[in-house]
Image 1 (tube, rainbow, N blue to C red):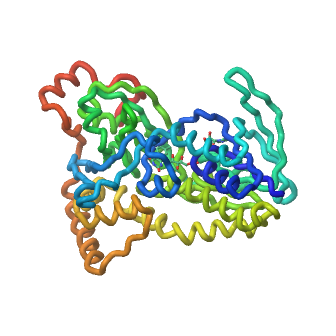
Image 2 (cartoon, helix red, strand yellow):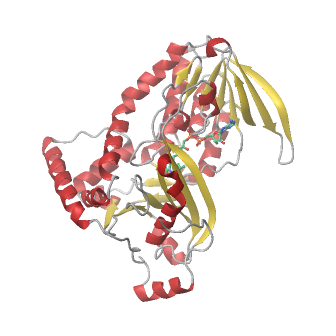
Image 3 (spheres, rainbow, N blue to C red):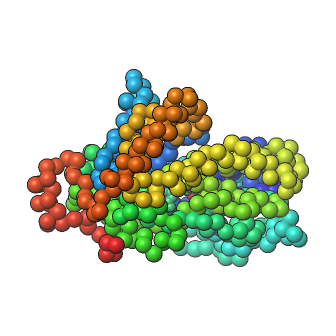
Length: 444
Ligand SMILES: Cc1cc2nc3c(=O)[nH]c(=O)nc-3n(C[C@H](O)[C@H](O)[C@H](O)COP(=O)(O)OP(=O)(O)OC[C@H]3O[C@@H](n4cnc5c(N)ncnc54)[C@H](O)[C@@H]3O)c2cc1C
């Protein structure tokens, strides 16, 4: 009888464990911290709700308006009512990871996975890394006590332990390029919070990130404002976050930071994602997309696909799958999503490299064809075919926007105006106090 350890109880691990448990395979799901609040914007595409059977109760906000803000503060509204006239079912889900993760983890446990509240500290990988594998872990018994030195032997490991994966190290999966991201959770006055209730903002410009974007996303009773940048610019991360604060300060006026969080974001798949009978999924494998920084859906989906491959190759747990059996999951994954990763990588290289290109990017977002194409593929995760005329229009639009963008790029950056107060009132408020608490750094 096959024995599987899934290490990491985020979306990728819970989805793997769920599939294995449903097939009756003996599965242990290890999570070091059951109330873990993974640093995350918490934005999920609509299709994830039905595909992963998520209850609407775990979704804090349904965003139907997205605002793109260029370096010169040109604001482009993407309004789902306009993209999908007559339909109110489309939205971007905004949730708190602590809520979603515990829901998915508990569901896997209810289906039969053994949930272990433990930190896996060492993995013995057997001859040629082929297993059986011995996991050493510390089990959390309750808030006051833990049991060190525990061990378990398994035939197969799924590494769902995130960007700093211990499983990836044990299997010598190789390094990947990564970005660093920071986020402040900010409580706002009720007028400002009302504005953000069904709205997310995306800021681009060298002041907020040289290679990514800054965001303000609504959560349950606060917003999350953050930014990211590639690791080589990691030293700038605090000053970039100050850039986000500065640009959005009239919208975040009188806000109070209740939490600061930071975490790496993988920017590329690992060189090796399956070694022996060890497979990586989610961030451990490196499945976050460029341009959007989206990883939750891809974590859950890769966990599910890896689980399904294990069920199939093991004949529901009767035999131990081989390395080449597990690699079939990689082939299916790359076939399904390879193009998505490539396209988003190219877009990031074209549009996030200079303020001229960023102006062009925001200008292009005002086109309805672009909006529809982007949202169809984001919300429904389907590859959307373009008509030849649409394609031609998009090419001309890109060229025109890029040329115009250079002229529009600003020399300095200014705060965007308040969305709910007049200029005099907001300036008066800012003279008394800006955002309270949070990170401290000088602006670059
Ligand atoms: C600031 C920020 C904002 C983001 N915003 C978004 C967004 O809005 N939308 C989106 O789609 N993606 C976003 N992402 C990316 C997204 O958070 C990840 O892609 C996603 O969490 C990956 O899920 P996962 O299950 O693979 O890994 P994780 O969510 O990282 O889960 C790994 C789990 O493993 C546990 N663990 C780790 N090591 C061990 C161990 N040794 N023993 C036991 N347990 C262990 C951890 O406690 C954790 O619970 C963001 C990322 C960052 C950093």
